[in-house]
Length: 93
Image (cartoon, rainbow, N blue to C red):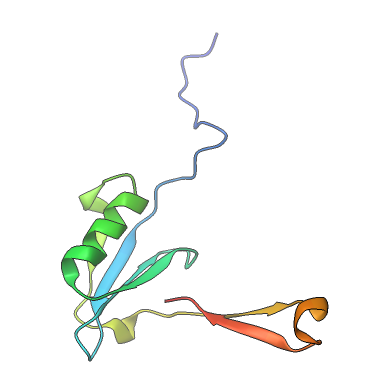
């Protein structure tokens, strides 16, 4: 038997979450890998989301002064059968 600790195979490693206000006063949250993000009406809801997603670890939350420091990507989805060959776009934020 080994005394080493191992991560559970189905658990995702905890990641830092960045949160920042946009120019309109809304709050943007994004994990460091850019896979999970959200757009919220206030800081409180943004913080609740980030804590729920990161295992309730406030030490992994990083608050930035403005949202322009966060980078959001645009992902294209293609489904020829449902939209006549046109690609649909979804912005993560």
